[in-house]
Image (cartoon, rainbow, N blue to C red; front, side, top):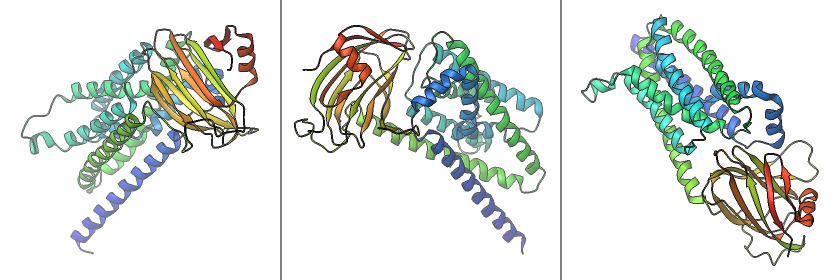
Length: 390
C-alpha cells in the first residue's frame, strides 16, 4: 500500500472513530436526560443527603458531552504537566464561582440559551487550537488564560441550571451545592485522566498531527451542531409557552362523562427554595381546563402523570419548563393521578393560583382539605385557601 493510500486510510479511520465517539456521547446524554425526575428519585435524593448530590455531580460531568468536549479541547496541545494544571485550574475556578454563586442566589438563565453558548465555547477552543486567529483572521489570539476563565464562568451557569432542578434543601443549601460541585470535580478529573492517557499515547505516533487537525475540526462542527440543536429547542420552547394543549379533544368539558364535572380554585403559598405538588385523579378520556399563575416569579415545574395501580415507578412527563403561567386543556393518555410539581428557586415567597374546571377527582388528601376549607401544610409548601367545588 502506498504512503498516500495509508494516509487516506488513516484519515478515514480517524473520522469514523470521531463520529462513533460523538454518537455514543449523544446517545448517553439522551438516555440521561430524556425524562423527568420521578417522585421516588426526588425522595432518594433527599434521603441520600449530600452524598447523593456528590454522585449526581460526578455522573452529570461524565455524561455532559459539551463540558467534556471543552475540557478535551483545552488539554489537546498541552504536553507539560504544569500547563495542564494551570489551564484546567482556571476552568475549574471559573465554573465553580458561577455554579456556587448562581445557585445560592437563585440566578437562573434559560438552559437552552446557556447550552447554546457552551456549544460555541467548544468551537472557540478548537478554533484557537488550530491557530485560527492568526491564519484566518490575521490577528493575535486573546489571552488563553483569561478566555478559559471566562468560558468557565459560562459553563458554571449551565451546571447551576441543572443543580437548581433538584430538590435542594433550604437548611443545607450550601452543603448541597458544595457536594454537587465536588462531584463535578471528581467527574472532571476522571475524564481528564482518560483523555491525557489517550493523547499521550497518540502523541508519540507520526499520525498525531493529522489526528489533531481532524479532531479539532470535528470539535468545531460538533459545537456548531450542538448550537443549532439548542437554538432549535429554544425556539420551540418559546412557541409553546405559556399555552399548551395536551390533546386534540375540544377545550369544552361538556362532552366527558367518566367523572363528575367540578370546578376548584386553589391559592398555594410556596416559600423560598420550597417545593410542592398538586395532583388529581382522572380517567382516560376525561378533560380538564386548567390555569396556574404567579404574579411575576417564574417557577420550575414538571406536569406529569402516573398510571393507576402502577408499582414500577413509571411516570409520563407532559411538560417541563420554567414559567410564571401555564394554561391549557388536558386529556390524560391513561387513568391515574396527574398534576404539577413546582420548585421555587427564588429567595422570595411565591403565591400560585391554580384554577381547574372539568372532569376529575381530587385525591383523598386534597378532598379532606377542600371539605375542611382550612389551611393545610404540605412538605415545603402551604395551601392557603381552597374553594369548594361548584
